[in-house]
Image 1 (tube, rainbow, N blue to C red):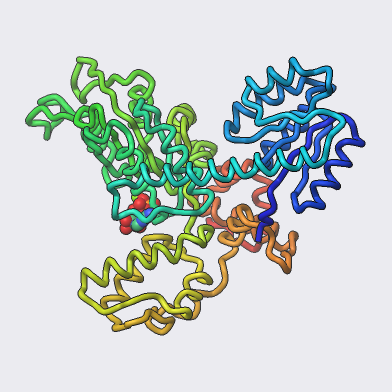
Image 2: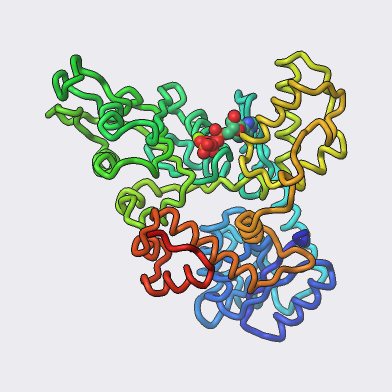
Length: 470
Ligand SMILES: Nc1ncnc2c1ncn2[C@@H]1O[C@H](COP(=O)(O)OP(=O)(O)OP(=O)(O)O)[C@@H](O)[C@H]1O
Ligand SMILES: [Mg+2]
């Protein structure tokens, strides 16, 4: 479990004050970070966002006001309490104008300081609760088929969705494993913007051969190619003023990528076989379950298009790292299918809950949904228990290594620790194998995927006993 203590960042160039505040605040149950310069403080605040900041006005490398401004720009809701000397009342006033929460003057009176800190923390807690509540209410208003997430990573995503809801044509790239809810999110982006009253159109870039994809996107003029017997409008035109969702963008053929880039840069395009420039206002939301950056490195996806798409990037985490979401989703699907199949399920029992928590959900929300559909259809209940689930033993074995790694990246270390060397080796062998597969056994390309030269790559093939393909 991550510690739930409020984190206070103390920024002061005097070591004695830092030590004093650190000891005092830690005694009162806070977690304290300290920085002696503005630069260091700003770096620390990026790594770990504090709940409250105590900031000295006089710092060696920049003024406290500059630090305040910078912090407020990034975290408008962060309460920053200034520490000032008596002679600095002007600056204190200035700080309040820059939206400092309050100030305490030196010599510091402990009671006063603690009162200010408590008040600051209370107000942010309230603001946060209000904010998250409002966010969810306006995001999900009218969407009764979407279960809101409470995982911190998803809350951040909703926050971004809310910020881009203004409706300008900002491009959004959604990355995430299969079944995590990328389609659902794309829909949400559309539904929460003024574009909602215009079309939301969607196309799967992997499903169509190149020329067909092109004519679907851009439309064509009569006679542009053999089958073009009439003129046809493309999705870009049809989605005008709305949103076009390009699913599995990683599979888009290079020539189409070039044309799409042009659209994104100028919001104008031509129908296949056409000469007139057509202007459109379409928000492009693209999704992929691949790592597009790696595709770019492997020369499979255009770098310029990647950066153009990547204006806003949303990475949807897998279900296994959203533990708090599993049960609410399961309950939603249970009641949904219960109604649909007129069954008598009344809830989820303890044993089934445990299975849900331990299981790695390789197919994410889609897998959970299918499992619930099957179970409700075939079983009788009334309480859903472990034996109804029909998961085979290996299904709920512990996490696969890639899953474990991913998990470690977002969660704290397990209590009993992990062996770093084993992890690194395992990870390397998985990556080498994957790159080799992705490159269809072409060593030069596989090496490039991993940023290695061919010798180093071959060395690893041997090291991990991977058979070279002929
Ligand atoms: N928040 C949610 N509440 C309810 N159902 C959800 C939610 N998110 C996803 N689902 C359901 O899970 C399934 C998978 O979601 P979705 O199709 O959006 O995933 P995806 O990431 O686009 O998958 P793929 O990569 O395979 O295209 C769908 O049936 C969807 O309705
Ligand atoms: Mg999808």
